[in-house]
Image (cartoon, rainbow, N blue to C red; front, side, top):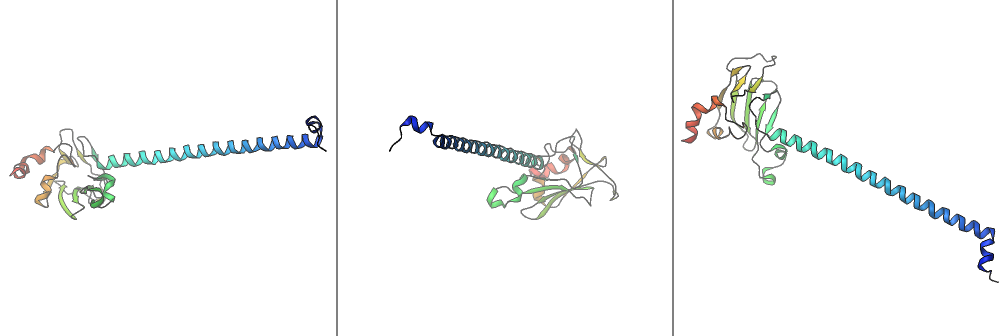
Length: 189
């Protein structure tokens, strides 16, 4: 015998099954909703972390790549590279000829321009007087564009003829005034 619709709805067992079905479906929806919220939070958090890493990397790239500007102080161990972070990859991949400017932590009175691709020193800037290794001498470019090492004008020594063309616009934004005089005529001839 079949029960009528009214009789089935009055049956306590049927009511119990309907109630449990409603609870289970509701709980399942709640779990799905919680998983969706958790997934969205994880996605947003991952995007935030990736954005932070990308911004830090781009900032470092620009910091390494930018030329020395008037008024800037160059600290021991500081390194610049014309290619920035692209210098970590081979020239065949990036197309960038890597040239590094660095101030060694040990020979603190020297600023060296090094051609990473050909493995040779292009030029060196040295102080005019001997400086004790443990002193904290300063290499800086003053506001007039002159390179000073421990407040004395620096002397440039070219290691190759090719080094003469590597002065400006990189690593110096403006050609230092004491470097313009003697070698500029030789550069144009």
